[in-house]
Length: 86
View 1 (spheres, helix red, strand yellow):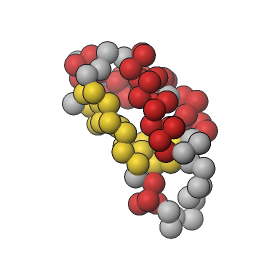
View 2: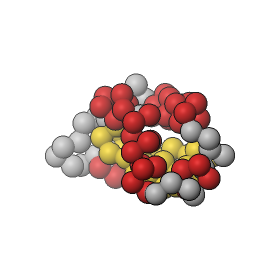
View 3: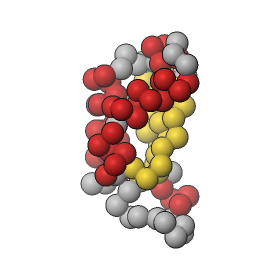
View 4: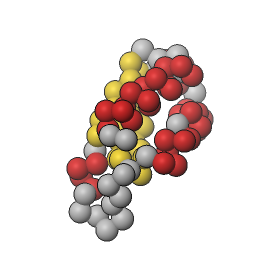
């Protein structure tokens, strides 16, 4: 899997399960390439989600919801994730 494929999967899963206006996926893997725990098959991503639905929840619950939706990707393709909700 490459970052473009992962980005599309992430966007599609989130759009299917959450009411949101916009989703951006930024690849931050390059910041971690020299770390000893770096796995070339896993990515570091930053999600920027514009969603009044998530914004109206508390931060912990909105984050849990995103993690639940992306469970498979987190286990197999994502090493770290940063989530910003606007």
